[in-house]
Length: 278
Image (cartoon, rainbow, N blue to C red; front, side, top):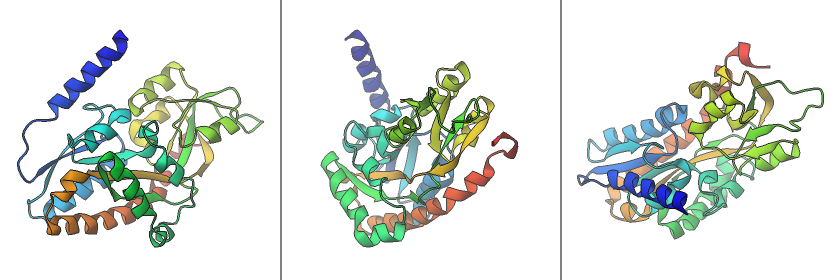
């Protein structure tokens, strides 16, 4: 009980630090990842910057990361308008709703998803939590995730007996390979690999290089697999308070973000150090 009270106090303090006065044109954005994660800087922050430039300064953004609110606790403060924008993954709020994790089970064709109205269905669902679904960035099927390992795969070709960092997105896949999934936030992965708390870490193909996990996990399991959606939400009340011109601007730039994200799914695979892939 004491631990829970202390955790609650820390969370409340973090939120109080984030709720200072805003100018009419300034919005708080929250990211589940720090700047070591390439998509935060190369895609999300670029998206916000593009909006800021296109609006001629009418819309400005102040970005915070997991140092402000832990990644698995960010849905509620975004839904309650403490933050107006959220860049995150569905597995990070799986306990509140598993909806986006289920969507990742579909085949990864962005054009077909749009035609089927999947984005609108996701939007409708998340409005229950005070959020509008703004950006649906999709990495193509089969090129989303990989597993970094401290030791190479043996003759059996599986992960029998190994503890692998995971989220609910791919925990089932790892279990089928004989591994024991361990749920860890991003900041705990490097020290957990270094100390042997886990034997490997599953993660999007985009990212391990920036976190330098290859220093403590020198092997990459292939092939890559799955579909990944790291989404951008906007607080529903904040969205409703925008002008029509501001909404149009966000919609236009969200399409550009989605296209860039899909294209990025493969170039980071090539960016892995060749000497560290086996």
